[in-house]
Length: 407
Image (tube, rainbow, N blue to C red; front, side):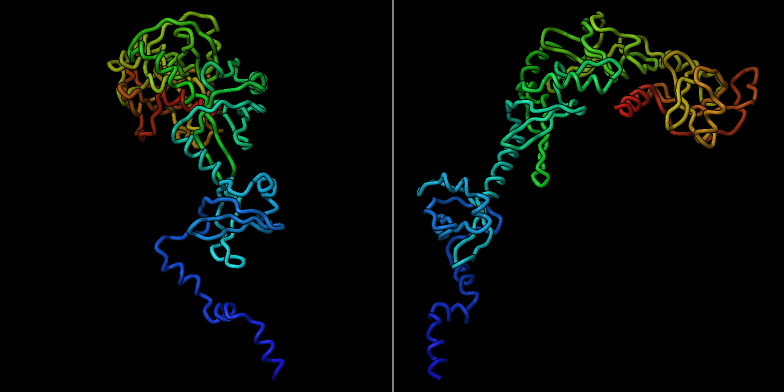
């Protein structure tokens, strides 16, 4: 009995109280006139000191925090450089941890602070000057706060975009590698803390300077400039020193343009119309200065007309057919049953008879039905069969679709 009493005396009153009242600390916290930090939140405090593999942080009214175990090992370099009284930011791991201390993580807090800063920089669109570490076929690799981020080629400013004829990816990579070691002004446009990914853009960094340059220009204005680059999705035209505009593939001509290199060369002088100015970027159109063939054709054609059309190309929707220069539409693949049967019946650059099933010149929309071996009537105006209306396609949608599929 004596031994049992002695054993019982070894338990202190405080420990006995905790055993009988395990939620004592929780009840106490509820009565405090302030709210305690939650697990996962960041708290600020002052370094008290170290004791072995433990570091203690004064959290003021919240009490004392502790960094120990794996958290101490992962942050040991940081802890080694901290002196008593130094301000620290830590992440709460446990409210009532070892010996009643609030368990903290310095490493996680540092990472959270970095991503918080990245989010603020992204919202403010603040310009960062970063060095290019590497290049790949998609763009450039940069580093910020020891986090590697990506600058896609599509987010390079116009003056830095690789001007490679035919869009040869190996040649594009050669051009991109020329930036390795250089510093670029960029903004953060996407962050993903979980995946530790950052996407940069060079376009946002140049916007203020370009806005000033573009202020003297207006939509609808005609400009004359020099072709400075020919790429698979259009051409770049120099308006003045430090300012270029893009004429997209769909704005080069009313006719279908598949390869801009066949029509334009670097150094060539061209006229274009400004069709858009946004965030310092200028959009141009060469075809806007030419007569619109769709408007000229609106009095010539009607739904149901039988016409002769030239097959321009095939795509996933069907055959693109021109009924006159700059006026073309789609003969849908469903007309033939399968893509293979369509290609067996039609050949590129050959002419066949079609019936117009939809013609909306204002919208530049045209669909056609292949008539096969059926001979057209002498007047060429009478429908020979009942044709369902199919999804329409015009020059704008076709050019944009082809440019996207090739990218």
